[in-house]
Length: 453
Ligand SMILES: *Cc1c(COP(=O)(O)O)cnc(C)c1O
Image (cartoon, rainbow, N blue to C red; front, side, top):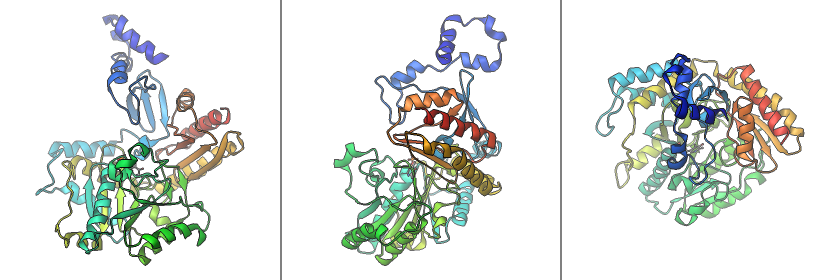
């Protein structure tokens, strides 16, 4: 209980005599008020009645989180897919500092600025060619809302307002706001409590063929039937390309994605690719759609966009979608958040993309994939383990039963590792700059803890 001990020292023994102790220790002593946190602050998906422990982070550097009791943890989560380059990155800090001194924010209605133009140029350049128009949103879920509104407005402007439903995949996850929730798996998507308030969309079975397997007619038969039967009501298909994230951490066949694209073309549906988790190299390609060589009509980006420094997201679409929307009844696209195009977030996003593209990211990600695959392989034989898989810088151990998150998390912390298990899934998506040695410590901890539950 070193954390508790530290807090008690602060409250009972704070004397000038302690002034000689190292600065770090002093910072640790003037600690955070964890009681206040427990009583007043919501954490993601948390209870305020007897909440589980939260670990106070004093600072973060490279791939390490430094807890205020002095322990350090190798971050295997990249703060939920975000921190590609690790923490406290000089290039990103500089971009934010320089931008801050010009302007941190200015409204985007009627005004524009260099950081937004620079970032949008980069996004148009690095995403699949047909994606030419950029909407800068403020979080992943909002960019999904924007993508849905784009699809609905597009069909309205085509004189087809009845095409207002979406087809999504089971095990999919697209965010926590109402429009996004309605496209998440109704069971695993964490939103069934709100079912009566959600638009009833259509759901195809989760893709069956794994990443390295072919995809047969039969594998898309039910999807095809749903599309055929509902073609006149369907506006778009929305999916996470190749990697289904929060809804199951599954990697599916690029051929499946190709077939979905072909179906959308055949039946004139838009395809929305949600690359909020997979974007910026995580799956081994800069964008996961590249595994299948396809381009969506609408693309959502978020999470790693700012290199994990700030909240920011983007929705890109084709000329066809943008022109369609703007020739419609409204004449404009009906969305515009207050913090749209935030200059600080745009500047650091550009810096992050530059840093990524000038780094040997492909080699790093493929080295991480090899290492995850090799070093997690021993778990395949463990009694409680159902499956072990890796793609890009993502390693997944799927257990047969849901794990006791607190217990597993604590055991991993004892071994110097930060992971956040979820249901049956214990997974790692480390920063691309993670060294071989640090990754070995991470996988070693997973093998030790999960092999002996
Ligand atoms: C995280 C995530 C979202 C939601 O993004 P937020 O920034 O949490 O709103 C949407 N889609 C996918 C695939 C995600 O991984």
